[in-house]
Length: 367
Image (cartoon, rainbow, N blue to C red; front, side, top):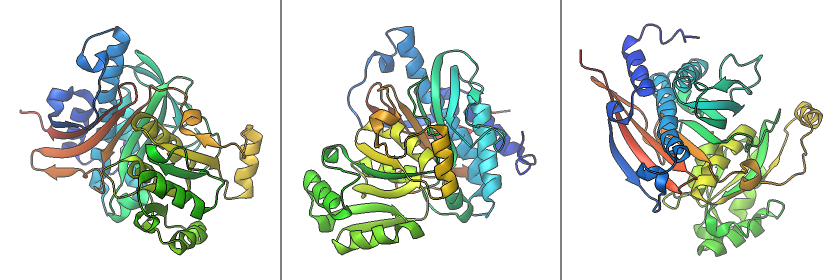
């Protein structure tokens, strides 16, 4: 399916095709910054065939998110939420078809009847290579994209087949995400005050210095009041709880912890990143309507189960890729120029513990 807003833009189509089909050298990756130490044989280009498939997977996933970001970036601030998301879905689906995986969408754009592409259960990839469960969000933060606000990103999470939590018809999930040092002190059932005091102590801060990421939603009015009552700082964001999870586990971020109820799909996507980078998320499904609660019960999912990164993604071999669309706290957005575009991405490789930030130049081929 071709998005109607892209049909008259052959220049953009050429860039997306380049990001989708070319290797790293042709896509023009000019800067790679590793912020994690050890790499195994897979990253050194030796070892078993399985090692090499995992090595290739990391960069292939980035090509997928780059394709989505390049397509979506043209809609920044234009108020075309559905068109921007549709363009990214088209581009991401096309990119998946070129890579050597046997992928199954566990977290996608919704049920098959409501999502023509990247729907839950859809098979993607060319049918060769690794069998994977996939969690995708071609535009995480569609409102952010439509309104031209920061932190809209294209994201993909991957793990071996059978290792990814299937939430069924759940839309909302209560979450607390914190850095590795706070893993043993977080309790999703504890009062907000107790959690923040314990987290602050674990990471060596005073509570007044703690920065909490919270989505600015009516359901969080009491949570915000309680955080302010004990004197912690708050970053309020209208959307983007995958970005919030990444900030909470990134030692270079201003955010120390993320709290509140966000999307269930975003929770599973975030778990791929946390599994790879470190930190912890404690979560529980938190339906916001009776219909959602009944659908979850009919699906057979336990509402009272406390979920962790280990139960959401049961394998250590988790991968996460993200490319900035609108720019923001940790990833710059897509920048278009006369010869093509520049994108900024990150890869998290749970198999090696490696984190890479990649700057890619997507230049038009010489005629």
